[in-house]
Amino acid sequence: MWAKGYKKNAILWGEEVIEDIYFQRNTYLKASPILINVFKNLIIMYDKSKDIRAKNRCQDLLLDVTVFEAENKSWYDGFINRVCKIVYNRGPLGVIEKPLLERFGAPRRLPELEEFEDEDVE
Image 1 (cartoon, rainbow, N blue to C red):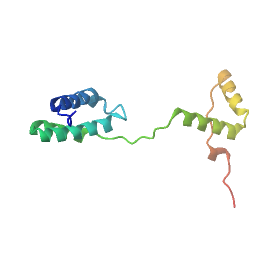
Image 2 (image 1 turned 90 degrees about the horizontal axis):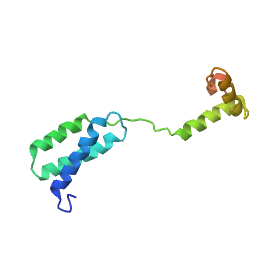
Image 3 (image 1 turned 90 degrees about the vertical axis):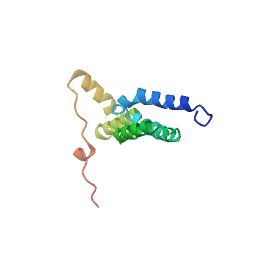
Image 4 (image 1 turned 60 degrees about the vertical axis):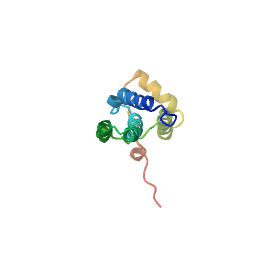
């Protein structure tokens, strides 16, 4: 919008994005990178429009935004890892046996590979 000459609309759109997302930055992983990008764009736009107070406000708010590093593990990867543990520990019938045992009794934890498999010896 800025490049097309709609300078006020571009600034208002950036402020609207910040107003909608800023207070959710600690709960959503994807909010922080969006906010950082919008803040940087607003700082440039306010610098070109010579609004020093708004530029300083955006710079101060940008310092409060932190990006969280988190491993995005999909449900499919978790499911496959769980099934692989069951098959390796109990065999192919373990995939059927484990849910049936949990249905009629208390659930049991799946042991890790190191707990039931000895180290390879050369």
